[in-house]
Length: 582
Image (cartoon, rainbow, N blue to C red):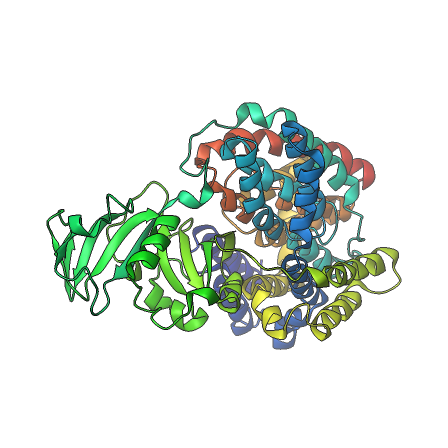
């Protein structure tokens, strides 16, 4: 191997380590790799930055905007509500048909967005049908993941692989090309979720089984000047007996009093660290006039109250609200937060947040809407206002590129651009909403990794590694090699992002296929399907959404997800070589 190829191998190892451990955010890691490629002369600057304006990146950005239009106008929620009204109280059929609808929608809308939209609805439905959330939420996540395999736009992974295929002298995927494997896999997967998964899912009691809004939060509330409770004991305030709130600590200036007793005297300016449900926290704020430090001049009638989930790669991870500049960025107030099965005796403002934390946030509709760029809204405690009158335009705008792209009448990217412009002109979404709804870290990751794939190919590294691998794997035959790359991709998607795993394995698999005279497209399809189906751990964003609300444990995903992964693997090994022969 030459120097360039050895450097590429070193960068590959660095990428795998950083992606797996998340020592840096995944988009930062991807940009770091890109910078090193340019620094070492492994790729020309114009080639390095060309991927940022690639058709794949443009299409993904456009889909974020069009999906936002569907969400804003309530289209997806209305589908679920209509189905529930039609089926009434037929419990089994309501849930089965709901999973089918979720899978179908996920074929055209991001599976994470689909899961996020249907999560509050599924929780509400679960309460009305008197079911345990642990029996319904994991199937919701898995159905959304399965549906993503039906079309080329079902997941960003499909789009990314499709976009890089021309670099390997292969045509991009047709709009419904993956449906040959995606539809059977989704149907078999749904049957599994309908009839087998209920026997494996835990029957776990939760604090949200009867009312999702009754999770306990930690909140900082302050006694303003002239408050009636000045110089009264905690017992006299009635916070515990009347409002079911527990005072965990009191901050007075620079001093913190932990676990104050009932006879502790509170003073004006004291900040109380309270624990209780969102309903009780809002009740005490309204009745007693307690305030947060940042909300003194906001009219309550102008405010929304929402619950947000901190996801992997969120910029708030490991940082406090002040370090992140939460108030300055969004204008919202964090009233409290919830951390599953763990009590934190610390001021909310000084808490470093973790994956799975739920924030109770208050702000104007415009302010809370901006939060969706970096957080997932899992429930709106206040009433949500949807612009239903623009729903038909949102639907037409979303269908237009699908019809144009599938029929070949217009390039999919061009149709996407036209639809986005129409959405902006008719104010279905505003320019500000469009920019905030695009997941820029995802685009940075994809663009940088596309450039890495180009360098991996152009330096001859992929060909060199493929040569070594070909000699080693040749005895196991095409089916064994296909199975090996499928399993490798599944394994890598557990610690890494789906797109990164696919882009790491794809050059190697295509190189081996070319060396041994097999059809490279067979391997490209297998890797795409393997990367898009991640069921074994809750690290997939759609699965993480339901992890807390369902009170799941890590092992629950292994028990339910591993059989589904094996089922998808067997189905893939049968259908993929049949439709895309070796």
